[in-house]
Length: 366
Image 1 (tube, rainbow, N blue to C red):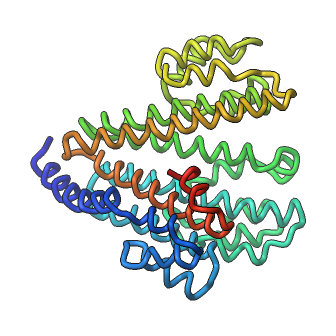
Image 2 (image 1 turned 90 degrees about the vertical axis):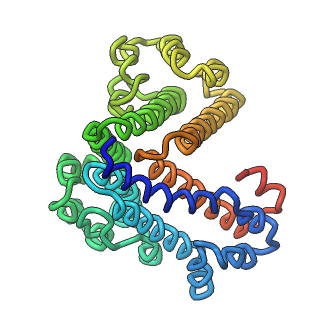
């Protein structure tokens, strides 16, 4: 690795490891869970990196405004790390920030859909959409206020999303909902993600590939289960849903598994090759979900596989933190831990809002 790159990562490593240490040693979550009210749980954020949320809640008394402030903090965090980096590594982090942008676009689209297609009142909900530029010049007000699909499409005319939105029409959305469009946005993200990874060199490329190939594999396993056992998609529909990257996808396509009428055994064999730890849950899932018992059991197995996905990702990032510090892994680990921490804060505050008791919250979030 070049000396300039070592020096750059030494600086980033020192910056981010200090923050990671605070994340891992903090008693914040325990204090929030022990709080007897929502107000006390929010107050526990005082004197932490999330202290601005205390002021937001004091001014508005609105938990959704607190969540919007969390999103603003997340965007700032990505931009700060981008400012530390140079070259093609910056492109990878910017692409990860595009994922945040895509989720914000989906939220705005759902409001438009609710208003124009479903004729629901959305005025009060539009204030909870982040409307400033994240990566690309998306006009969120234009999306929310559009009276036709042409108005929505125009909001993306000068962005990377133009081709996706130009391939849909209002009639298609009325017929099938937003799901196909949202899938296309997800696929666009993964296309850009893996191109950004391929542009890296050496350790940066190896570390990023190792993380995101596991990530996309496990997501494809979950997509296959959900849309085979619950939604019963056809072969062509399932191909359109699955993310066209990763070892699992490549094996499924190479062996033409989706073209077979009874393909679960083939998929189990492929999954077993890469992820034996989830085979018990995958083996016990049954296709006859007309039986409510089967449906409930399937849901439990899927939750176990989702938990495995989360735990596997966490192990990958922890492995990076214990290894060589001079690569992009430290930044990727930081983002993962930050999002994990942010998700925990959201979950605890939501549970306090619904007046869950302490033991129920601990069982749900810890």
